[in-house]
Amino acid sequence: MPFPTASNLASLGISVRMLFSGYLTVVGIGYLMSLVQILFTHGMADGKFGLSIDDIVYSYYGNRSGSVIESKLNGSMKGMASETERFKIIQWVRDGADPEAFKKDIQPIVQMRCIACHSAQSGFPIPDFNDIKNIFLRAETDNGATFSSLTRVSHIHLFGISFIFMFVGLIFVLASGVPIWLKATAIIMPYLFLLLDITSWWLTKLNPNFAWLVIIGGGAMAASFAFMWSVSMYEMWIMPRLHADTRDAIHDE
Image (cartoon, rainbow, N blue to C red; front, side, top):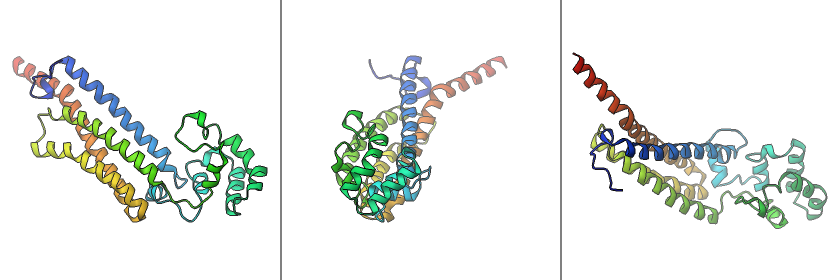
């Protein structure tokens, strides 16, 4: 199918507008779901709903006053076990993570509360607690995200999000009601702040004072997406209708 010859979004044919709008709608919903997912993962790192600086620090730098297990049980996994069960596991870790005590008191809780997700069969990219070595590793000091996981997530985000903004930008470039300097700024912003966002993960891993950059990078990226999405949909569907109403009014006079 040849690329449309129309010079702006308002003059596109109905088929092309439906194509672009379908893509923007699905991507927009996907972006909202990613924000919800952040709230239920990083946003629960400090045990409180909502994204805060502490959540960012705990996710990347870690909560180095305690273990990974303790951080998770007081954070994103807080609702997965009762208060008594969580206290028993945390106390076991603080007492030195004794293997015999684990078999007697902790393993039954793990089997009942954790294995449904923490197993190779679940398909989730999380540690398999059927191998007890993975549990004992997480009884050590919480140093946040590992360099291996940061590398994996960084390359996924760099490739995936770049493709999303490539197509959103290609649609937005046909907008006619935006000054050229603002259009160029909105198009380049996601790429610049994507680099800032991912770089700030690594910097926060080394120093918690960089946690602010994570929020700035992610927030600016979301703002540029919302702006391009809104302008594109407005010019495809509302602007042509307004122009038609204006012409009808002039004709009636």
